[in-house]
Structures are given as C-alpha cells and as structure tokens.
Length: 179
Length: 150
Image (tube, rainbow over the protein chains, first blue to last red):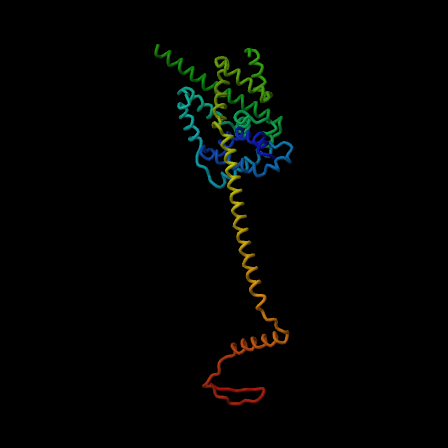
C-alpha cells in the first residue's frame, strides 16, 4: 500500500474513530496521542491491511484493542464531569446557555440508557458506523441491532419529551401563579 | 423536504430501518425545521456536537506518521553507518595483523611443538605442587609409602 493509498483509504477513518476513542478513553488530552498510535500501527501493517478484502473490521479492531490497552495501563479517572465541563465551556464556540443545558440533558439521557442501547446508539449516531461495522464491534446480529437501535432512539425521544413537557408545564404553573 | 416526507423518514428512523444516507438527509431536514421536530433537533444536536473532530486532524496524523518514518530511517542509517565503520576498522586491523605477523612467524615441526607443550605442562604441574614443609619429620619412606609427622 502506497502513502497515497493509505491517505485515501485508511486516514479518513481517523475522523470516524475520533469520537469513539474520545468516548473510550474519556480524556480529551489522550485522544490525539492514542489516535496517532493507532494510525502508526495501521501504517506499519499497511501491507497486511491490503490482504483484508474489507479493512473496516481490521481498522476498528486495532483501534478498540489499542484503547483497551491504554485503559489497562493507565486507569483513567473520570469522566462524565470532564465531558460536562467541555459542554459548559461551549460558549467559546458560540453556544448559548440554553443550548449547553440541552446538550447536557441529552448526554445524561444517553448515559442512563441500558448498556446495550447506549453502545449501539453511540456507534450509530455519533460514530456514524454502518450495521456491519457495529456487528463487528458488538457481536450482535444486524436484525438485533436494528431492534436495539429502534428502542434506544425511542427511549431518547421519550425522555427528552418528558423533560421538556415537564419544564413547560412547570413554567406554565409558575406563570399561572404569578398572574 | 416536506413535513410529510420528514414524518415518513422519522417513522423509518424510529424503526431502525433507515440507512446512513437517509439519516444524514433526515438530520439536515430536522435542522432546517427545528420547530416541527423539537425532540429530534435536541438529540441530533447532541450527536453532532459529540462527533466534532478537530480541524486538520488527518493532516496532523499523517505528519506524525511521516515524522516516525524519518526517525526510523535516520536510526537505521545511523546504525548502518556505525556498523559499516566498525566492520571497516575490524577489516583494517585484521589485514594489518596478518600482513605483519605472517612473515616473522617461525614454523615449528611437530616434535618441537610437542616439546614446547610438554615444557609448559611441566611448569604448570610444578606450580601446582605443595611446598615442602621444613618442620616435617619423615618416619618411614619406601617406593610406595611415606609416613611423616609434623
């Protein structure tokens, strides 16, 4: 595999892998280093990658295994707080207080989903993986993945609706009392 | 995209039946009609926020690969340079040694070699013998037996 081929076929995976690595390591600082190591591993094995008909599974497995190694070597502290902190600091990117609150609420909803639902919805909605790629990572059959994804999406929608309906009702009650 | 079309796509989306392309279209449509799909707009906003990737990520990673390649090549070249130099020095020393030693060497016959070796072994043997104890009193001595007292 030439450098040009690598740039064309493998390097774009970094954009797909970035959110996954960030989620697994739960540490912004280490994400780029880990991703660099993953890309170096793939570069050093670029001739083997050619032998795989579809390198997707190979790339995903190398990435996930590397992240697990990193986690084993260094128990990463913390987590959600850091993510929340990142969202809180969004105004630098032009987000309003309302938007930040909304993002944090959706994060909490996703975090509270059952493991299977959370895993599948993150792979699909955040990482943009197709069903075959998710199957390689989770081991679930595609039909089962569709069911899990459907339930997870509905659950997220219901939770959002419940929170915002509640907030609207609360605001109406407060307005009613004031009037 | 019309609202009716969006609703159809949403139905498919919540059944887990949409493909990635349809989902991209749906997300785009929801973004441009936030008031009609408030729940989805919030969820999709979060997903988009989460998959934000730093600018120039691919270029940075490829630069990292190139840097490592240069380092490896540099180390390989340096190792090659040093080992070549060491081999050249060893070769020069060998040539010098053999060219200076061979003409002066005296070729010994087998008997002479044996005599020299015997002499050397005798010296070793003598060196290993215990020293005579001057205070030792010999009580009895013949060809096969020696009795001494200190």
